[in-house]
Image (cartoon, rainbow, N blue to C red):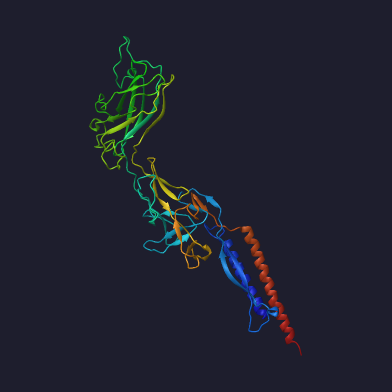
Amino acid sequence: MAFNIGLSGLTAAAADLKITGNNIANVATTGFKQSRAEFGDIFTRSYGTISKTNIGAGVRLIASTQQFTQGTLEFTDNSLDLSITGRGFFVLNSAGNDDNTYTRAGAFQVDNEGYIVNNGSPPLRLQGFPPTDPTDPNSPFRTGLRSDMQINLGDSPPNATAGIAAQINLRSDAKQPVDANGDPIPFATDNPDSYSFSTSTTVYDSLGTPRAVTMYFVKGEDPGAWEVHAQMDGAIDPDVFPDGSPIALEFDTNGLLVSEPATALTFDMENYNPLNGATVGKDDPTTPIPPPTTAGDNIITLDLTGTTQYGQRYAVTSLEQDGYTTGRITGVDADEEGVLFIRYSNGRALPLGQVALADFDNPQGLQQIGDNSWAETTASGGPVIFSPGTGSLGTIQGGALETANVDLATELVNLITAQRNYQANSQTISAANQVTQTILNIR
């Protein structure tokens, strides 16, 4: 019996050494969760045995349980490195397979088809929720439909400018441009003496070609009167102006704009270089901006709301337009809600999708399958898969990886303890052997 007790102690201590060694070996493994050896005593009973005098039969390893505590976040230069702060697992799936695997290791990359995958063999695809409208930066997500997350590696299409919004301050002491005889100077774009102030902005046609629109401000004869002339660069005929130009502006004695702040500028694109068949504006001024493939009406709305006539300095407070050219992918960003945005060189940021996270009632019941991954079991319960930051699910940190939750100093101490336990149990076997030898030597 003593031999068996000592042997069980050696087996338990050896298991403890293996578990501790495995923790130490994975101290640099992304998303690794340390394990703990849990032991139970062996106690045999037979019918009629009095428990007060019964002796235990040794020890056994009950379980090697993983500890799902939070690991430290380590920031990287890879925007596709994702980490979870709090509860939850990334959901992974192989192509054409409905069996999910789960991981805390968020070192992702893009394969040759644009799918976001992990570094496993074979690579598994990251699961997420697609946007309802991929062209809308504020699109909601279809949380009832989970799919492989895939990056469209094509360019972002252009969108023609439909509106210009400008806030400008015009000098209150400006004088009407006049010649030596006191007569008003006829406006001409090539004569700076014919206008008081000018500013320009770049707009885009439906093919993404940049075109400069310049606004020329001419002080009128009355104190609060101004005219605005708008011209697009590249005009074949330099005297061609859009319909409705010049635009009359009127300011009150407080320097505030009292005339209509918005007006329509109509451009005849056949008069401007390059002659590429493109348009500007949108197809219907009463509807939102159409998709980039929809032909515009060549009308750009100029909105001067907020323009003032103060002081003795010209100033451009704001000058914006709503068009953009073709964009190439420059990177991917993730917010704390797990939304992945594709950034383009034209300044656009469009949603790729929202990362799906899974949680379990009993994470320690998950089955380890290697490569920092787990599979669900009856002990873990079924997964709850939803958006990060909702319910019990944690949030996402982009450009960071979760390190192993192994405390190396603690594991080294455990290593010493397990070694001492092994040595002590070997002494039990040695002592039992000496007792046996003594009995055998009786004559």
